[in-house]
Amino acid sequence: MDEVTIYTDGACSGNPGPGGWAAVLMCRGARREMSGGEARTTNNRMELTAVISALSALKHPCRVELYTDSQYIENAVNKRWLVSWKKRGWRRRDGELKNPELWQRLDELISIHDVTFHWVRGHAENELNNRCDALAVAERDKYSKK
Image (cartoon, rainbow, N blue to C red):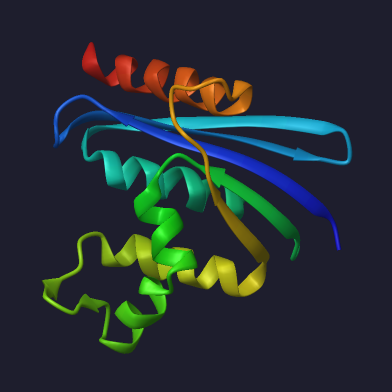
């Protein structure tokens, strides 16, 4: 099973507003950068889209170390909130779950891959997180000008 390291980030101006996402994937010495954006979105959607896009790019089941600066995503997986939401029909204990289609897709992908989620502090000294941030901001800025 291939071992892949992934860094992800999302960026948004306004909530909702123009947004961007990015991921850096590394495996067997190769590195791939991915990014995209939307004209009207939220930061959480961009953070989720980055993770989903990166995991979707994997061609076969992999062992993945995934780094995100989104505590929401890291907690949703590591604190098993995702499991609880799924049991409740994609609802939170106190009501609506935002972006259920994205959480469902993430759930599908982490059932294919052996993914370990790690939280990293954003805008700190992490070179790969900072690279993702720069790519996501560049995508966001493309949509800000439209």
